[in-house]
Length: 56
Ligand SMILES: [Zn+2]
Image 1 (spheres, rainbow, N blue to C red):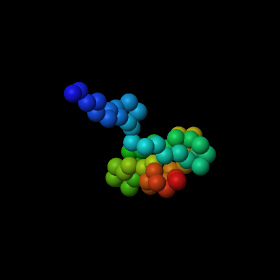
Image 2: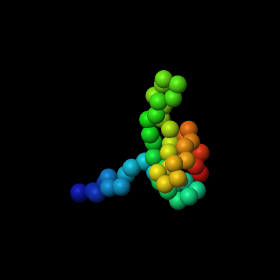
Image 3: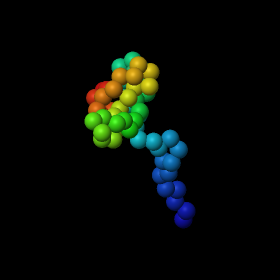
Image 4: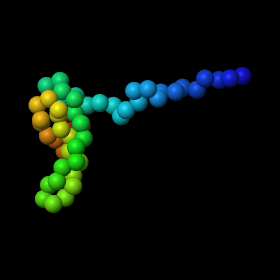
């Protein structure tokens, strides 16, 4: 019997975080003090937090 496995391929990006302004939060690599750091940035209001969770 052909069993259809649960394929969650489409739209399987890691869950999105939304800023309080409604904009989408994306991870960016930024140089800070000579180190490359990943920060979460809201694309709409440019709010910057250390982690996407901080926008919740
Ligand atoms: Zn925002």
